[in-house]
Image (cartoon, rainbow, N blue to C red):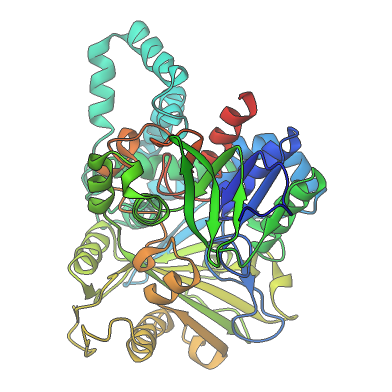
Length: 533
């Protein structure tokens, strides 16, 4: 029987990730009656902060930094209200850096002038090549950010393309779009003379944070956009931990009369007469609503929550064929002291990559894609206490370590050092042994690291999926972000924007355009549409 304790729901949201919370906050503040359902016991999806190691050490369990959010439309609409609800960011002027195996290093700052000077010091002309790349993003910002952020099957995006074609001609526009497909490794080699130079090593790992690799089409453009964004806003972290984002968005929703519910596992979207009418939870409880918004993967939506009889057969087949990307592993450390890097300035980098350059990233991506533990993985070390000391007891520190090149299903070890039982998958033993390799690699540069570890928590790709059903095989990007599953074809070739074949049922989240990240953009777009309905 329908549940009558939640009366008159205008918009029911399945999942409580940032896109759901943004959508709910905007609609609630617009007077809509919203209700958010979360299957886990904690709101926030991939946004949560926990004392994973020891009391007093606040670790961002999954996602952490917010550059995409602070430059996006959701923050533009809600930023002032979120600050009023207690959301505060910590930041500095060195958002990222790289440390290479041979000890060479390079930092990216929020100053274009300093970056050009630092790049030129690595290789004459590298600063000019970098400045040209940033100017390219700036000069094409309207088109680039329309394609990366707006709904593509809408007139506003078509108008941007038409305006560009009218001003410059269709052929130059096609030329720019073709050039934008260049892989990052090719661009880094061409622009900086060496795909394994410090400049290339600084930029190449950022393709991984967009769900791509350095040999993927469009990865050069994504690298340029990331650098442009980091220069503009740095690497903002939420003061006290990323869970502050959830608390602030929840406050906005509840202040506007919206409601949120945890431990609510949706097992079916109810469809009658071709329209979504609500959902049924595990246990049989039903909730009716005028609109349903699902923040889930395509396989969940089309193969689990909806009856195949309600869907076009070709869409069901596309959902079955949807691919997921590489897994991630996370290592959380509580430390008695900060790492003693070989160059003191590296301790100020919010995100520090340990990488040998574009070729090394390419090799590790290939190994992970083939089911192997990379012999020399790209190691991303976030240093939250460098900008937010309050996340640990006085004088103590934390590290947030991400390995973005992990096999979803491990089949072997590229280094031939760790025995892998393909039947056991990501066992506790395999997880910890691989983490040992990573910690040892970091310790070769920071020799005090091993002795300073007070607590350690490792999350394998399988652990990540257990924390969040959307992280299939530990993929945090909502599915493979290759060109055939991006832009016009995300989430599926048979869908457009955030619409589904079911009337009044909407699809948001990392699996939909504009893809992964903490931008909240897909939730913003659906809120705009429903707000006008």
